[in-house]
Length: 484
Image (cartoon, rainbow, N blue to C red; front, side):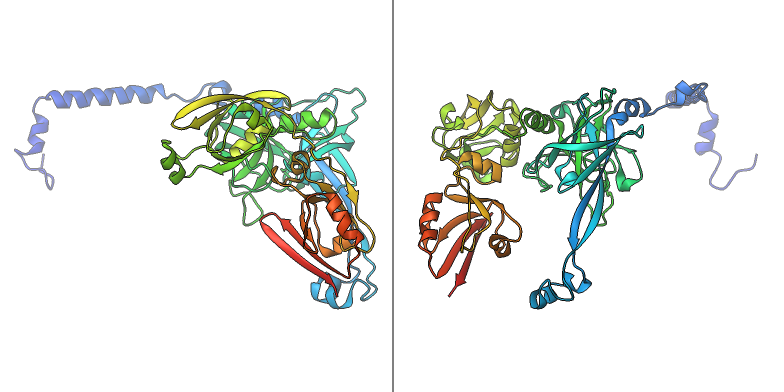
């Protein structure tokens, strides 16, 4: 045998020809094991050996996920020019025969049957403003649906269809608090109106509080493909349970990029039960507010990490006050669940039924305390004294109320707010033209600070020639002067 390049006699080639040493024997054993393992990896001999499928879960869940079609009559300008703010400003709606034309606007979404009586849950934004709602089941049965109630703040709506006693598939609620990051999930809905579609993915994150698509920023994030039309559809676990209502996506193109958000089923369950019990949403309130703990606050209070909510205000006579919560306390847990920030605490409170109890785990002066708390509905004190404004007043057409914890909750205001707020605005009125919106807080009129609607009445009755109005909308203060 001739030497190959690099193979010189007396080198490693000769060593190979010698009897195997201990290391070589070990290598031979490994090669033998690998050969045996390869032999074990035989070609599958049956369908059962190769089948891995979500089909059993889909068969359980998909029949209860419906398509929702809505029809809404909208006004559109009779001339395209009227859609331009420039022309509308200078020529008004009468320009070029500016009588608005009626147009039918169709939209689509998804929903989930959660009650054998025909109760369906979907997103509020799916059916908002709809004059006709049609529900289509996967088996092609169609029903006209009625709105039982809505909760715009949580972006949840409850519909009802009359099934005339016919059986309906129902999707059972799961425990969204039991879901973990990495769990497999399915998203079922009607994307782009192509028909029922199932996509798979995992739970990408929990307690996501930065989506900003509802007042309760606490979502399950998933990479299962969610697209327009999926809203109101189901997020389902591998045991066929509903753990979320698909609500929104993060996208720059309008299509799925693998970042979708679902309202947790524990929130959905409470809202649906509240609506079905009387049509009015009732949530418990804490009677306290605070700020999320940051690293500086955690260090100053002796906390090991920046978690929890630092309480800075407690409503006198409210649930937190009665439980013994004090300014300076840090709420670390609510009913055994960690409180990461202020949004998490609001979510935890909102998912508890009214007139129940919970336990707050609190950090106070270097030690933990547990405080039982009764969760009641926010009180309507002072009485709302709902009043529709009229006459020669810039806010004519607005409905105003005294602010109480109850009205603050309905309007999404700070429960510690006081004074007078706008609860509704009729279209085509002076208030609407002025741009007043529900939730605006009227701070003062002609320099008079408003503590109640009685204060507003006295100012209006004076009939001044000029009106100076001051509003608060969110974090902004708006000042308006009208008249000579």
